[in-house]
View 1 (cartoon, one colour):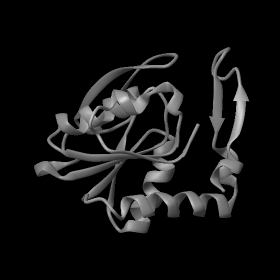
View 2 (tube, one colour; view 1 turned 60 degrees about the horizontal axis):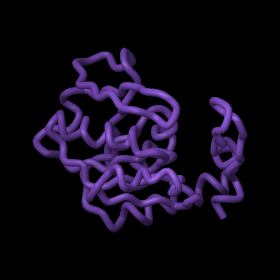
View 3 (cartoon, one colour; view 1 turned 120 degrees about the vertical axis):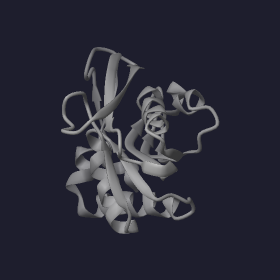
Length: 169
């Protein structure tokens, strides 16, 4: 069971937050396989051309999933990390604000994009990623993640966007 590999880290990154640490999941071949297989099962019911992973843990699950499903991968990164022309989107986190970027030519001609991350909390990062894909002309189709912190209502922030998660807290 995937949840057995998730470690709670109290007061990280600041007091009052209980961080869901996926490191034990990544360290376990069985746990990682279970997570990727679970994401692949969800994704197999969706229609998309490419997977887009959000820095940094979305890269781990997104690239493994892209490889398993034989599709390409698009990175969404922190500012200044991508070498080509970029589009950016700023957003609010549960404990601050941030900005993410994508190459402007990453999803040409309305390419259908599946957004992948390790965790959905308040939905700010995923919402920004969705807007970013739209901004460059791609068509986001759904959001998938390993963990969803349902008590933070991130799913509601994404409106009508289909959201799928393996485990919810």
